[in-house]
Image (cartoon, rainbow, N blue to C red; front, top):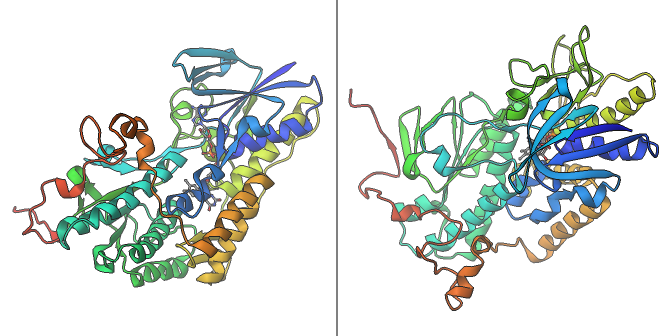
Length: 471
Ligand SMILES: Cc1cc2nc3c(=O)[nH]c(=O)nc-3n(C[C@H](O)[C@H](O)[C@H](O)COP(=O)(O)OP(=O)(O)OC[C@H]3O[C@@H](n4cnc5c(N)ncnc54)[C@H](O)[C@@H]3O)c2cc1C
């Protein structure tokens, strides 16, 4: 039997495996999927998980729960040696294992792109994984509890200062959602006021949301500013050390929560640890039919799709364009990959990947959104409804759709759930300390780094200061 190995069970990998299960005859191939998580993450819902509008588990689709004819291995593929048809996988016990295959499918996605900025390693949280979304939510909710204990001033405001780096979809969506969460939280915290909130979005480009055209992009900037946010465009974060953000403009301010959403970086297994052909951005080179290689030099028995692959975009007007890394493409590529792989196994013709964009839709917080399809732009509440409608239909499996929908409906009736779960990080604390969840060996609140107000912050320094080089 042909042994097919799928590396990565996200959008493209999950849909490829699902498709193979449906299409392969009994005894035709043996499919194994390797992923460090036991689930596929529906990433477009992560901003709403961070804002507490969707339950964390509802954005995860169990691989074992839905793939009944695939062997699922919990592990991280560390290298692919296609010449010898072997992948090395580090499993949960830390042991490296070699997996032999006949055909490989590379769908390991991308990682968050970072830069060597002082402090981000210690301070920043990305937003590609559900753990990150939950930590963001818990950190912001816990900051409200702490801020409510402080008098108005620098320390309080610093706790409630949020900086998002990256004005792409991920950054703008999480920014809008958290702004909406924080504003609505004020109702439950009469000690605090709107002036205590400080939201900053930083992007090195002069505009945000490259996926929409200029005017809708400017509308989003104006919209967020009207809601009290600060947008720093054409600006870089040069330091985030010690809870203080320093911008390339010279401005600096104390910060509580830093979210890093500065785009996609190439997956290390693809960029550095494989003999498959890789382009200058660290993406696997594929042909339009999703076979690895170029039209002149296809690599036998290797396929790739999704964010880790440079897939030719045959629908683009520009020759040589590559499909943008998004879920719209990854899902369709995963499905086509399964179809083509089965056709190839049976000696039949394969099809090229061709998808015309369905447009772009983004949430900017509850009741706010933007949609664009060619020249049609819809903003505000209708766009937000379209965002929810589209994604609830797109999340895989009816079971997940219904669960997400029920939480939204219950929020309309009862309001947003604002309970943090940061104490789950130290479940034994209360048990060991006679019921006090905050007690620990170091006396530090679980899951939350030292409170910004505990750090040195000169009180005579204005909250947003311009620090100029003395020279
Ligand atoms: C916050 C956010 C919001 C988004 N919103 C939208 C949206 O509204 N619309 C849209 O179209 N797109 C959106 N996207 C983009 C979209 O989610 C991605 O383009 C899509 O997930 C890519 O699918 P993929 O299968 O290539 O990668 P992923 O879905 O990231 O899956 C990759 C999988 O590979 C696994 N993996 C990684 N490395 C290894 C390894 N070494 N070995 C084994 N397994 C590995 C990972 O655990 C993961 O399960 C959003 C992304 C984010 C982060």
